Image (cartoon, rainbow, N blue to C red; front, side):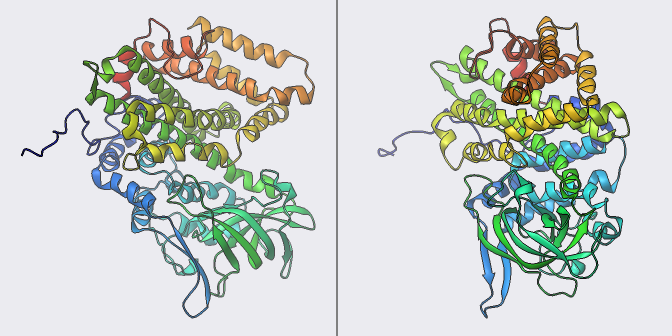
Length: 550
């Protein structure tokens, strides 16, 4: 014993084996408020699974072993297979068994999107990268339905809760997943600059088989069974369903060149691919590819909101848990005024992100209503921009709350930090989203009317919100050139985002939350960093609500 240097004290216990739904009061409130009370028992069951030590360990394991590309077998036959760690497949199995890839399409009912978004929010807090193929499979359904003959062949294998990872033709599988290929080297977000070309094998037109020659610079989740891809025809950019295997059972020549060496999103493979005469069916009309695939893109952008909100949630929970069990300078960290300011600010941002995301889930559940349809068209772009943009700094601040241990790879925080910028870039970066907001307002003025109707529901409840609404009205009343308007797009979308979040919180959150948000985000003295909430905010109430002991 004389060589015993110290006892380990003042360290928090591992955060595991807790019900991640029961400990999230804002999420429980949102499920009831947005129309999915019927799903609470199932969500609570899943909250236990998502918070279990076994499930949390899968996230660490999947990220400790990067996917490996094998282009040829030992005899020299090309087979383009990506090898994943078994933990990745286990996470995929959980997601698909829970219906996170298709449940609103399998069993459409009031609140279906809310229920699915809730479980996806809980699941991606454990590990976000494998969510890429889950999201794309979820998002492909509305796009495929534009081509009923092709949908009839593929959707039965999509709308199943069986995960089948085998590298075999889709016709031999119990369930399939979908990906998407738009980006090329020379174009990036400017997909109309794509050079991949498609020529009909026999007849041309919707549902016909074409041959594609070209490349895709980013093809995420390359082990998906099929992809929606953009390619040029004689009539312009068009959308095609390109399977990994041809109809005759031979390999479709989508040749994987290499896997991307990414900063984050490590458990998921992203690849470069060359199409050397790959077969694909035309979805929709020739020359209407962007209009066709945008149905898929819109849904993936919504999932970016869920994923980034989930990242915020997990980050602030890790910070609060640490601070509740760590002492410094004679007091528990959570009880120290400056630390409580930081934690409350992080919790405030997290609840605002969740509230906007779940409101959009309700809008998706009610697309037959003109107001909900118009609101979703505008507010999903606003939310995708704002929530995803706020996540990286949020992750960093949560990491700093934990201190040196938060930088260690055996802590979840480095993974959350590396994952944080992904959704802001994927499916259209910040500039693309802001320009899309302007485009929506210009082409569909009813979207802005729906926005003002939504924020108007809280008008008169807080002076800061009223001023912010008036500022937005004033901005759109200005006479500006197209270039001037575009140059200021981020400023106005920032304002649109916090105004909408403030209005939603005033309607639905406790006064401690809504007042703190409006004073800090809509007031005149909003600090540049987290932890700058003004005097008079009930910080402890915000923290307690964020990570309750329920």
